Length: 404
Image (cartoon, rainbow, N blue to C red; front, side):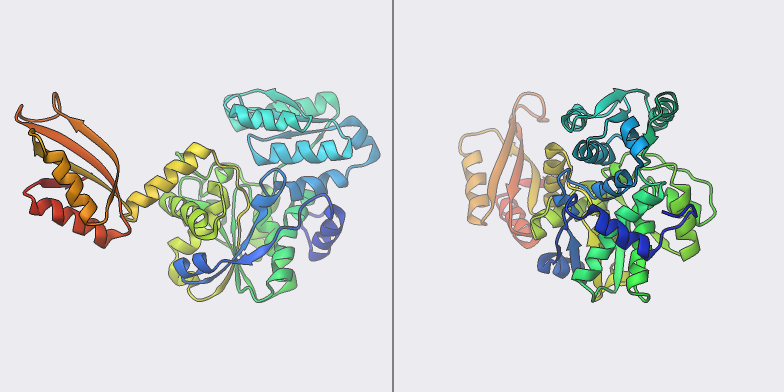
């Protein structure tokens, strides 16, 4: 790599040749179900199929391949609470290089175990990512280790950019790429590769509403971020200076999407494309859902750049989406406390085609009178019209129904 703070298409092609056989060349597939739901021709780049479940392997593999013999012998160090940690650990193990990964104390135990599983030494330090990063830099100096930055590194950026290279080789008809933005390395690299291969293509970045750091930097505004997000993989406060300069010089726009759109994207990928994506991995599709006019009818390339989502969180997202879509009804009824009432309600729901999946029946404390009881039903339905029919059938029996 050159010392100038930029990456070229030639660098990306060299990286692709360098990491061939070390990183999976994942498929780019046109998803009919997602395309119909999104109103665009959506091509999904399935980098959730990488060995560690995320695109980060591309940059880690390329950066480690560029180490000198002395640097390999000394070992490497990285700071990460997620996918970068596993990527560096894995590719260091493949190359026989000692790896140290500094992770914040709050890192989930499963991620620590997976990282250690690749043979890395894991050091848990700090209450924040910034504190962990400071410790990692200090360790690098004290032990003579090479620091592998997750996004502010030319070798890493060139490696990440191989994703766009593959997408356009497999789907040259693409008109626009939407790329999630954390520190900016993936977007900067993909923009270089895409514009180098197809100068007229549009490339946009995607950030979540609580962490729009790159959008703020590019707009010349002070960075103000923070808040709960399902897209923790791109919840970054300090973007990379090299990616920032590259994106600024290329005039790349970054779209900001709400949390709800990310949840909808996760659910659409799971139900429509049969693809599991983490929040950050679904952010690109969230942009298509949040800005439908921007992408309508166009051939859109979207990386599913990570699939490491907790099973409980995925289940909650899917259930929340069913509620939003009207495919699960949550109904509250105040009912007379007498024999046969529950049977009558169940019969009315069944006659309208609903499936009762949960019942909560309170007599003692929730009801306003000892002569009544409070009933809460969770009912599975096909769609909103069927749900309305069930409510109408219950109201026809003189039940007062409240949707919850």
